[in-house]
Amino acid sequence: MGGFQLGLLLLCCVVGVSQAWDLPGGVKLSAEGYNENWLGGHATWYGDPYGEGSSGGACGYTQLTGTPIGSKIAAGNAPIFQEGKGCGQCYEVKCNYPSCSPQGTRIVITDLCPGGQYCSTDQPAFDFSGAAITAMALPGRDGELRNIGLYDIQYKRVPCEYPNQNIAFKVDAGSSKYWFSFTVKYLGGPGDINTVEVKCGKNGYFQYAQHSWGANWMLINYSGVPFQFPLTIKITTKLNDHTVVAEDVIPDWFGPGVQYESNVQIRY
Image (cartoon, one colour):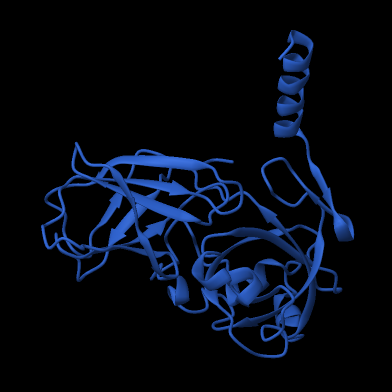
């Protein structure tokens, strides 16, 4: 290949990395896959007017209030939840009713919204926690907004941000050196997961974990020989294929039900 052709190819590659994308329907995406414009959707809300809805839900995060995820969360319907692989996505949402704040509110997907007027359709829909819908209101008008009940909203996918918090892995209570399952928490950037790979021991090799449910992944033992530790876990995101490796994050002396924080994070 001539120098001019190679240079042109390299230039095209560089441009391709940095450019945004215009898709049908007026959808604009950044180079990393996030929405650059607002999209129309529908929503409801549930639970305590100031609470987190339901603790954990179908993603398996358990308690949310007082954690980096917080109480401003939502359950997504099937197009959002994506059979659990949509867990952890972050969105900015807002509404246009007289009681709505003009500012967007950031939410995290932590649960599945399986039915109802909006969630049973094939169009993106959210079921907000009380804390989320309250945050979308103008000061002093949150009750007025909550009373509407069914909402036309605007939303866009945004990077998840967890300041001073790295990716964490909570070991399932029934895990052992023969059967190992864990939940991925506080994944920044895209927030969603396409694949998880696990390396057993210092001299092992990466093997794919099986997606169990929600944000939960399972390492299957086919040999009957106990897994070697520590475990190194590699995550590839669903939105933009970013990869992060948490070295030796699960120690040999791991405890079932214990959460282990890595020293890595995705920030875009």
